[in-house]
Image (cartoon, rainbow, N blue to C red; front, side, top):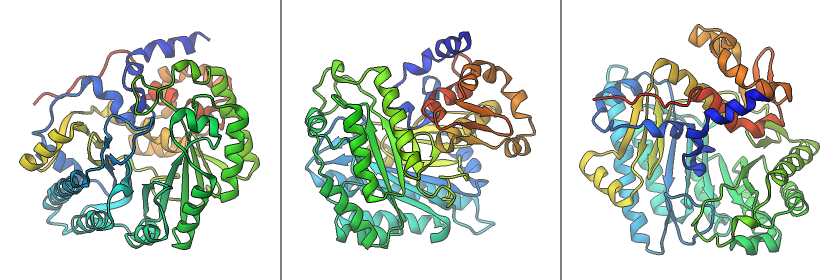
Amino acid sequence: MAGSAQLNSNKDQIDSTSQSQLSKNPLLWYAASFDDISSRTADIQHAAEICPALALSMHIPFASNSHSFFNANTVVTRQYSLASHFIDNLCCEIAHYGEMIYRSSTNAGKKPVVDSLTITGGNPTFLIASDLARTLECLNRHFHLAEATQRDFCITVEAKTFDNDLAKLVKQLGFNRIRLCLEDFSPEVQFSIQRKYSVYRIESAIEAAKAAEIPDVSIDLIYGLPTQSAASFLATLQHLIRFKPDDITLHLLQHQSGSYGLSNTPALLPKPQAITDLQNIATTYLLNQGYSVSGAGCFAIEPEVARPNQRGAYNSNQLALGLGTASLIKPFVWQNCTSLREYTRRISQLGHARDAGLELSSDQAIRAEVAAGLLATGTLLKDGFEAKWQRRFDDYFEQELALLAPFIERHEIDNNSDFRLTPTGLWQAAAVAKAILWPNASPPCPIKD
């Protein structure tokens, strides 16, 4: 087990980064070495010019009620004017990048193609219909949106407010997937996290989506909650199966002291062995119910139905807009500012909100793509890697594979014809991705203007 100990030791520096971000975006694992790249517009423009397609995400930070799972880039308010003004700025940011890339592609006469769009929050449906519509209209003006059969357009919605009218609007705006976030249905667990959901409310939201002919309903389920037990977690999964969601993604609660609405002490949180038990329960139950593993903590009822950038076609070029988001257009990675006031100021003065980032070396770009792909799909096709990078995977990652030997011995990694995380190994996706992305304790060198 020496390899496992060395792996943990080498990742101490990463683990000091905000845990709520690590599981969501491997780009931020480079944050320790970020530098100012706000003036690198021409370089970023050139990099974006050669992207065949972009995965685009937008963060709408507003919500009317706080709860324990919001990250630091969430604004809890009842003042809708803040959100309306934010959309003004977000449309300016959309126009900035759309025009920047279009100008660099004048000879081809093409707008940048978006085949994957994700809108998250906060609560994106905090927006009134007109502001949500004008955001998509602005996006459609400045980017070329892929055809309906070639796109994965997803929006996170709040079950309490997602009704038939909102479902029709979401469908009309071109989304083919909604994502509902919920927790344990146990009254005791709901009381402990100050967040109550009824089975009826979830069922009504899913029925509204199906009535509007939104083809894909995904559920994000938080586990590792205060007072949560194996029995309550299994009961929640059994309730969910009744609704027949297309995808279920399980997220481990990342407890942070002072989180919104979480007054519980860490003593109420499940112990590590209990977390492992919850993961095993979910894997066994969902596989028995006809779901297949489709990514890290992700289970899909029809994994063979390919969804762009979600199953088997991961797009590593990601342009992220809004508050605190992280983007990667190789070889550049950057993060937007995290202060709403600073975001507003930068958009008004510069048209963008880039705060800090770095230019990846060829080695870092390879590692970032592999790590992000593993988190998205749990699989790396060696033939594809070797054809793209002209390197043998096993030779290039010889040091990392030695560190990952304990995972291979426990059958959590299958490194035969391809590099795959097994159903049990997918729970270790973050640790495996860290080993690939950050092989040494020292951070990469930032760029210098």
